[in-house]
Length: 343
Image 1 (cartoon, rainbow, N blue to C red):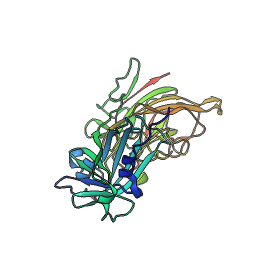
Image 2: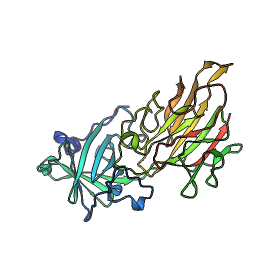
Image 3: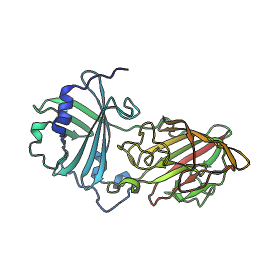
Image 4: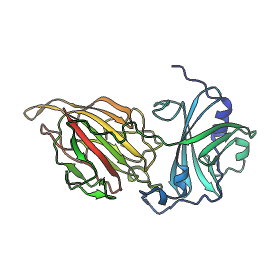
């Protein structure tokens, strides 16, 4: 499909000399908690920066969708990615056109630019955030785009287990897991816990929530992992707004990156829907690799992916069926509504 060209005024407003300016028009934009690696699990306590971070969408005059993701980095700092064609999984796919910028809070403004000095920002175009929207202006001060905040939800969020499913966790008890522990009264904590139920070939539904950790980076930011049959890790991480690598959310660690990074913002509930066929053995000799298809927030990110080996951190490959394992990486990642259908 031929993509529509980006309106020249919008590209100018976003990227003239690679400068992006966003004015945050709020009377009291406080700097978010900047304690090293602070982790928030309650939106009400997450600070002002949490109100700015998130997803925004708009449509240009020629009908092209624009998606924007704003990531909080702590201390009033942000990263921004604009996706030409729509948000990831909703019009934009890997390899599509993007525009990026870094930002710092200055008084009542957050200025996004490669450099912190934005004295001539008005000459280079700007955008203003107010009441949950981002309005983009060209260098002449004309409004060329308004992006409204959106909150996406996975189409499989809250999916009920079908008849015959094995209920691994329904919020009532963690007794179905070895080393299972409850969190916040009805959630499963990421505690290196393994389901007592052995699965083999199965379909698995998992819902997870990463914490808001604006000052953390990389593998220290909302890290856990869903180990399929305790052998193959599908990474859980706050990778919102990142490229989507094998060690980021949705990646099969050291084996495959996701087709597209479908990670939602931190504190949003997300889903993995996993269709897994175990490796085949003759005695102790493997004759066929395991395969997996995974949907992240309803979008296929791995399609019949062959798993040639186990990933680090848990069990070795072998002929015996094992349970699902949820990795503890020191962050308060939570799980809920976990069920499986054996094949």
